[in-house]
Length: 264
Image (cartoon, rainbow, N blue to C red; front, side, top):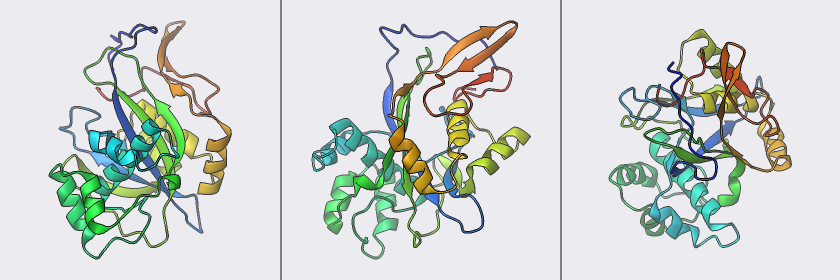
């Protein structure tokens, strides 16, 4: 991993693309909850080959839909909508819908979203609304490194209903979608079986603390979301990538020898 990292000015951070991601919990009676994960195509410019949670950029139509949810601050509402939309597009898992979609709607909606059709129109045509309260704010990461792409990403957590359909990979940006526990994914990363970038790794460590979704929700509600902006710190001859120690994360620094970033 290259140590040539240049940070932006604190007063004038580098421009960032607004984005959102969803951590979906599936409860298990005989073990820790499983989380919905996707493996990005190695050819992707950002986090190619990495294991991540479903998510992506917030688009203009997300802001249009956000106007229908005035009880939530506009930027937060648009981010939750993006997280729902991207999860549907990337995995075929319909989370955050206020009602049951018509038969066949999910498959057609995924195709339409891949073709860049507006999510608002797809919902309106089916008479569907969104339940944004199903998503609980968990974190916000905004690096300030001078790189080709910087994302300002809001993380949300949600409980998966028992009757969710199986996740199906979109086979465009991603090559695999699967459920696994946070700790099992961490263990796979430490063995070198999967590629996990620094923000995902830290969030997996935090998520591994919880025995169920309710515990994660209580934790998230007790720790106000503040933007996580990693920085570089030199300790003796060792260089670390660090985050603040009061944001709910059990591990707050990692050596550059092992830390993986989206551009690596």
